[in-house]
Length: 405
Ligand SMILES: Cc1ncc(COP(=O)(O)O)c(C=O)c1O
Image (spheres, helix red, strand yellow):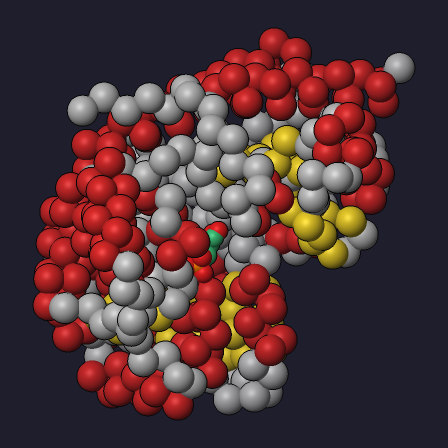
């Protein structure tokens, strides 16, 4: 089947977090139809990481058929659910896992909260690599654990890990865990096997538990290879937890279903006890069905999607080269998020946000929310029909010209 990713779909007033809510001050407010600013010059939402494309047809069919039944009682994954996860990891990533290593959670972020609460005591430390997915900071705040940063190095338009600094930070006995973002949101790096090996060696040497958030692991561009951290070897899989989901891959985030893969028995028991204590007993019925349909029958859609997103990236890159060459576009290796350096504009973070929101009328995830290292950058979500992307690019160009004038 050929999928049409060019077709814009009106998502207004569908309880869409991306389309129906807008940032005002520090809050997200519901942007209802009566708000004149919505009509006068609608804001293009290119922030939160969901896609403006329908999921694969087998997913839509599976959900429609269950929805028609009309009974929406408690749901619990059957063995077929676990099989579809196991088979997906084997087929797509060459990673052999077992059914009983999989613990479900209602989303990766809730899963991360539970993981940190299970393994790290209040006052102990957790390492992250900013600029990085901003809820990581919130997790440490809400579990009374302490965030330690190992900022990425930005050099010649590319990000890499600072291993010297990592070694120093891991040597602190209070540092108990490190959250790896693989592939990395927002900088779009798909970490190489060698980089992961160095990262893993340092963590293992200092007995730092690795929590590898691999939610973007299926969204990889041609020419790059995704390595699940746990495939580095048995010693690494034994001292790590992998966060996985079909939600980014197949646009199912609203169904809140994810899986933590925990090969080590003791770690798994500790985590499962935390889930039980926290009331995570059952899963969203449509999340279960959609994961199975996507993993079992969604590959054709995913392969076409990645070609479309790669073309979107090329479109953005060539637009910037032609019209906005002073702003470096970081080469995205995976994910559908693009990280752009707007520091040459010379604006502070508030002025840049104001320019994009009120002049360009585009809602980006502002670079500074990913940590101070992200100030002056914008993260743009390019998982949208090309016509929307082109409209956004024209708006950015026009807004930037108002500053240059
Ligand atoms: C690295 C990363 N982890 C987790 C999430 C969110 O996961 P969930 O919606 O399953 O909580 C995102 C969403 O953008 C993400 O980028």
